[in-house]
Length: 289
Ligand code: FES
Picture 1 (cartoon, rainbow, N blue to C red):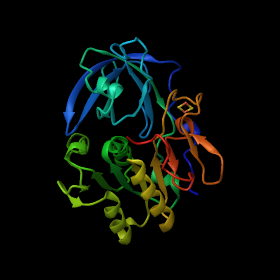
Picture 2: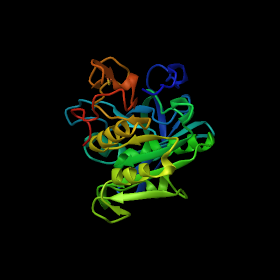
Picture 3: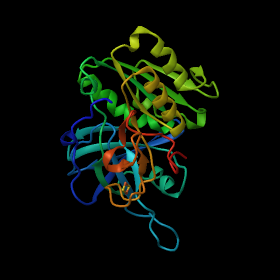
């Protein structure tokens, strides 16, 4: 099993939720990217997430509020007055529709940054220097911030991104601008016709993959294929997983994920980034949409 980044390296969230101001919302292919100004929280690490809720219009007609939604941060930047946080969102239900509709000037409740971030390659083994990023669909978001951290650390990267179809492709141009990215799509509208894991398989056949770790985020089926491939080939891999999250800080056990050695972890505090060798499966009930 690869070494985990020390828990003390986590960026810890201030206690309680805080109100941020939405400062932008723009189209990103089939998705939206909305931005918020966090005046008092620390900058997040790649792979960490926030629990988000719109300050207004967040609930059903009978007045019951929606639960906050867990979102990995796609990009962050220090700006005047705090830290800007960018989130990639696909409107697939009432909560995500509301988040996708947020306009500049509106309020957003945030709790975070939460959870365990991605490790740097050197933390996964002394011989590991490079990174292979594998993203699918909306799961490309945390890889966008990761590539900046890897670049700052001087780690060479290969980026492989896959999409189901044109309607479920978004964020590449906005989040991976000027990057050498290899694309795959199941409908063949861009790049290789097929799965992003096809590209990963080809890459792992070559010398270029030697001394590199895999970093993946995407739909459960894609992550499971990456997990199995990494274990079969003996390649270190970290996966940003998804599970139903009601609280985000370890209290509800709604995000339990089975461990390879037996027992469970709570993905919100022990993940969402996990060692591929650590978990029994990425096919967690309730994950994906
Ligand atoms: Fe509640 Fe993880 S979301 S314990």
